[in-house]
Image (cartoon, rainbow, N blue to C red):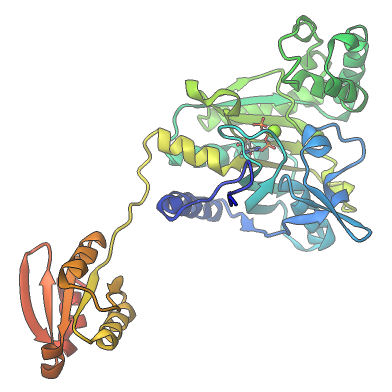
Length: 421
Ligand code: ATP
Ligand code: MG
C-alpha cells in the first residue's frame, strides 16, 4: 500500500515553513497598517452560497468539491469572497460597522482543476474585501495594498493589468452586442463558450481554448459601450494609480473568471518568462450586487485574492531572504544517569527565554556533541554526576572557544550576561 497526498495537494514540510511564516507575518503587518481585520469563515458552506443562479464560471460549474450529507449539500470553499459576504449579511454587519467594512482572510481553498506548476487542488489564498464605499479612490487603494505586498517581498517583475466592465447599463449594452456578434460563430466555439453565450457572453473573451481564434480578435470592444459615468469612474481609478506611482496596463480583454464583477477588474501578473499560464499572482475586482444577493442591502464592495503558493514561489525566485533556522542558544549534554537534571536545566533556560534543547537519553559524549553542533548551539552545557554532587555545570562558549565550570545557580545569569540581556 502506497500512502500519498491526493493529486493536487502537497505537504508543507518543516524545512519550508519559515517562508510561510515570514509571508504571513508580512501580511498581518500590512493589513494592520491598512486597518483590515481578519475574518474566519468555515471551510465548507451550503452549496447555494457558491452556486449562484446563472453563474457561468468554470470554478462554479466544474471545479467544486460538493458533497451530500443526508438531504443537505455542502461545498468546500473554492474562493473566499462568497463566505465573507455571506457572513457580512448574516451578522448584519452593514448595520453595526464603520464603512467601509474591511476584512481579510487567509486559508485553504479547494478547486478540482488539472494540477500543474502553480496550480493545485488545495491551495492557499490571502484576500481582502472592502465593503460599503463605492469610489474610484477606494479601488486604487485596494490595488495599492496588493502591490505594496508584492513589492515588499522583493518581487519586481510584475505588472498590473486593469480593465473596467462598466456599470449595469454599459454591461447590458455590451452583452447584447456580443450575443449578436458571436451568434454566427457559435459552431466554432467550445462547449463551455456555448454555456457562456447563454449565461454571460463577456466570459467568452476569457476562454483559454478559443483564445486565439479569428472571431475573438474582431469582437466588439467593451470600451465602445461604456457610458459616460463608467468611463469617468475608470479614468479616476487610473489617475489615482498614476498619482500613487503604480504602473498599469489596460487590458481590454480582461474580464476575470467570476461573474459578479462590475466596474474595475484587475490582475497582477508575473512577467518572468517561466511563469506560463500560472502567471497571475493576485486578482480581483469590484462587485455591485454581491452584498444584496445574500440578503443584505444594495451595497458595493471590492476585493482581491492572492495565491500564496505563487507569491512565495515568486519571492523565492526573485531572491527574497527568508528567515533561516537560528538553531539553539543552549544545548544541554548529560554524562551518566542524569536525564532528570538535564530536563530541569533545559526548562530553567527556556523559562528565561533561551531556545534550548537537551539530551534526555543515555548517549555517547561524541553523539551528544554532534547533536549540539547540528542544533547550531551557541552554548553547550555539560552536566555529569560529579557536577551534580558539587552543584556545578560545565559551560562551553562555542564562538569564543572557552570552557569553564560554574555554579549551577549562576547558569541563566551567565548566559544572560554573554547574550547582553
Ligand atoms: P487562474 O486564471 O490562474 O486560474 P483564477 O482566475 O482562477 O486564476 P482567482 O479565482 O481570481 O484566480 O484566484 C486568485 C489567485 O489565486 C490567482 O491569481 C492565483 O494566484 C491563485 N489561484 C487560483 N487558482 C489556483 C490554484 N488552483 N492553485 C494555486 N493557486 C491558485
Ligand atoms: Mg482558475
